[in-house]
Amino acid sequence: MNDNEFEQFVSDNGKDILRFCRIISCDKEMGDELYQDTMLKLLEKCKKLDCEQNVKSYALSVSVLLWKNQKKKYANRSRLVQVDSINRLESEGVLDIKDEASPGPEDYIMNESEKVTIQKVVAGLPEKYRIPIQMYYSANMSVSEIARIVRIPEGTVKSRMNKARTLLKKELEALGYD
Amino acid sequence: MTDEKLDQILKQALTPEIDDSEIQIRRKARYKHMSVKKVVAAGLVACAALSVGLVGVKSGLFKDKGKDNNIVEKVSNSFVVTAYASEGKEITFEKGKFIPFYDVVEGYVNSFAVSVTEDDENDEIDFSLELPTFKCSGDNIEKITYAVENGTLEKFKYDPETGTTTYFCENGELILQKIIDDKLELFKYDPETDTETKIDDLNVLKNLSKYEVSYNKQELEENARIQIQSSVTKTDDLEQKLFKYNSYDDIIAGHNELLKDLALIVTVTYKDGTTESQTITFNEIYMSNEELGIERDEDYVSIPEWLGEGRNILTVKVE
Image (cartoon, rainbow over all chains, first blue to last red; front, side):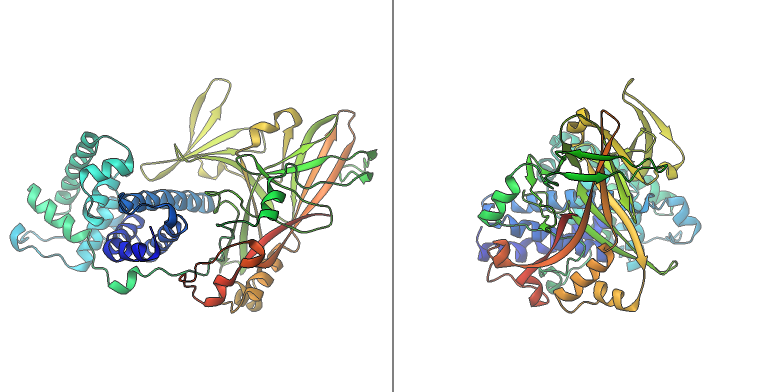
């Protein structure tokens, strides 16, 4: 992949990758940092990358690895990972969702705070369910692409996504969504 | 809730708008990580590929820094300390000379790291320095002790496959740190029985003042890392250099202020009970891309531009 091809790759896929980085990091600044680190890694290997291959998948797998590494370093440093639980978010009023009269799916438009809340609910999923969901929605990846990135069979990706949806439904319904 | 509605909710929540300007790649001020990522000049590679680092004292008188005034003097052929860099690569050091200590293997770029964090409450600047483990070579060595002056250390192994970090504790215990469902979990590991026992006290991981390794079990250390931790009093000047720098001079002066009192003391205990020590100190220098043998891509944009002209490189010296 030469410089022009890399530039084109960033133009075509940068938004999906940055969006995924922000979603997986649950933080805009950390997500931006992760995106930059991912792209710098790609730049280092730019000459070896073949634009005929799925570079986007490779980039996302780099993002996941870097994110896990960051998480580990953060855990090392702080000795304790702060994990927002639904209960705590709820008790602190962060999860301030939904009244009884929610609009129907066809006209339902979320506001920004609701989006953040949903992102936190998704972030509360176990990692094996969360990453496929985040890749599917945020990075616009297909099931088969996700399977290649996380190196599990497509059927497993599907079942994990179904399980994730079931868990999310349960959480969201508990918060007042119906 | 229907599947369609959930799908719609997730689509909206997980696809925030991204502006075109946000996807631009910038070369950042990466004071947290020092690394050489590209081609290393042939001479430096040759140097790095040589086994056995920290080639010590040719011969001479050594004084034990041991306890209880039990100072032992020993005339010997000295011992040699080697730094594991990565995958069989090692770096050669010379006594009295600062030698650049950088990664020579792709994929090891984040392993030598200096991280600087402010602690406003204590008005101090904490920092950590991650290094590979060392090993020693010599005759009749029973064990080796590593200790840090003006700091503490941790020794651990990280398994990227499982995400498990194994900590080597001062009392010889092994503690496994795992992140399970986004929660930090600790387990005491008994290698004899291969059993893990969950630990509820997350503060069990204590920094080490020193650690010992049996001479004939050093190969087990190869993939381990040590992290030296220390802190200095925060001053406006140091803060300026570390966080609001305007040049490599600022960055390096700041880092060297952090490193100036830090030392790793390597002490070997021979089978006859005598000991011998070497002191390793750290310093950072500037090296241009040319000196490092880095071929800079002309289209590669650095912000600010001077950051792309070279690197701040950690060096190590045997005193």
